[in-house]
Amino acid sequence: MRITVDVDGTRYSDEVEPRMLLVHYLRDQLGKVGTVSGCDTSNCGACTVHLDGRSVKSCSVLAVQADGHEVTTVEGLAQDGTLHPVQEAFHECHALQCGYCTPGMIMQSIDLLEENPDPDEQQVREGLEGNLCRCTGYQNIVKAVQSAAGTMREGSAPQAGGAR
Amino acid sequence: MIPSAFDYVAPETLDDAVRALADAGDDAKIIAGGQSLTPVLRLRMNDPSVVIDLGRIPALRGVRDDGDALVIGAMTTHHDILHEPLVREHALLIAEATATIADPQIRHRGTFGGSLAHADPAGDLLASALALGAEMTIAGPNGRRQVAAAEFFEDLFTTSLQPDEILVDIRVPKHSGWTAHYEKFNRTAQAWSIVAVAAAVRVDGGAIAEARVALTNMASVPVRARGVEEALVGRAADAATIRDAAERAAEGTSPAVDGNADADFRSHLARVLTSRAVTAAAGV
Ligand SMILES: Cc1cc2nc3c(=O)[nH]c(=O)nc-3n(C[C@H](O)[C@H](O)[C@H](O)COP(=O)(O)OP(=O)(O)OC[C@H]3O[C@@H](n4cnc5c(N)ncnc54)[C@H](O)[C@@H]3O)c2cc1C
Ligand code: FES
Ligand code: FES
Image (cartoon, rainbow over all chains, first blue to last red):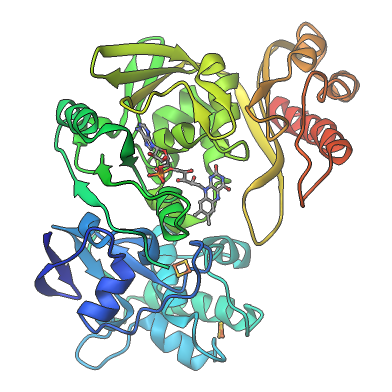
């Protein structure tokens, strides 16, 4: 089946099998390997991208369901070489160890901050409920999200992360 | 894993979807939000020859005020329910239960109708639909029919939906002025309920005028805790009333035994969680 999808600002038109998962379309067909897959059960959140501006687990969406829609991946966040404030904060706060969960964590953090620009610690932890990290113990991830929230509220940083 | 191969149809009207389902025969599967179905397909626990996507039928989405009831489109997402003031105002229990489902990503895709049609005994919306007396509108090749929640859930993962039928919307009688709470017990890493309790009450002049209590995962289908309801109604909304009523929570249930809990533990949870749910609902 032929699908047309806007991914990170570029329009792609491809022939895909209906059973192809969005995460595999992004990685295998478009080469957008920044989005990773970490489980078979929709639990880990590593594959999180934005579909029409809302976070989804791209392993739980068929590529054909994204036909005619807009996808933003972690690769589409930086603008002209400047990292998104959430990416910058993950770097600054050292919010990763192996980094496998990071693309999904960043995409979900951006969604969470759009819904709530000033979350307390509990709200960050609940907003990231669907993203598992085997390394960090989450402490620095929570710090990074709150730090990014501060930067973004100051409004000094470029806005990215997909339209609503 | 990747699912086995299937054909895909994405009709734009409900009539086309009903027709597509009839044409496809028994081996077709509806996909709504896909949050239960996609994992099932990936694990190859099911291999339909045709998948019919309801995601491109706008008429199945949204919540509408219909006088004495709310009508919730089957394809309304958990996220949309949480952001719909009508639900907070007239069916607070549904909003409270929805807030506990899974995580934000799954709530963005998963749907109200999909959860009810899937009928996982641990699903959080079944008990609330039962407690509030919801009624399902079902469309099939022979037209439409209405089924009350009490008849809709037949067994685990089994509803009165026939293979050629589609759940269209859910009519929820308004419970305006009622207060509600959904209390659930689950593992931190998994939001699925080991046991949960849906409670809605109408408190009038310090007494419980009306009460609806239903249990999640205390049988293969959601169950009304009628003994609890009886013991609450007409009594003072206080700790003693709630404590006595909650003792009856496990009456008439048949809890499953699995890796999370045995039947005695589930019965204990039902009593403790009922007490907490009603206490929070009644603001005691
Ligand atoms: C990691 C994870 C955690 C979860 N945690 C919870 C939780 O804590 N609590 C909870 O309640 N749920 C939980 N869920 C399930 C989630 O709520 C799903 O959204 C829901 O069970 C199914 O809704 P869906 O729209 O995604 O349906 P789908 O997955 O698309 O469909 C599910 C089934 O229902 C059928 N179906 C769907 N819609 C219709 C219709 N309109 N007419 C006829 N048949 C239909 C499909 O054919 C399929 O068999 C979780 C899911 C995952 C992956
Ligand atoms: S790969 Fe999508 S949730 Fe784990
Ligand atoms: S940094 Fe290794 S999984 Fe999170």
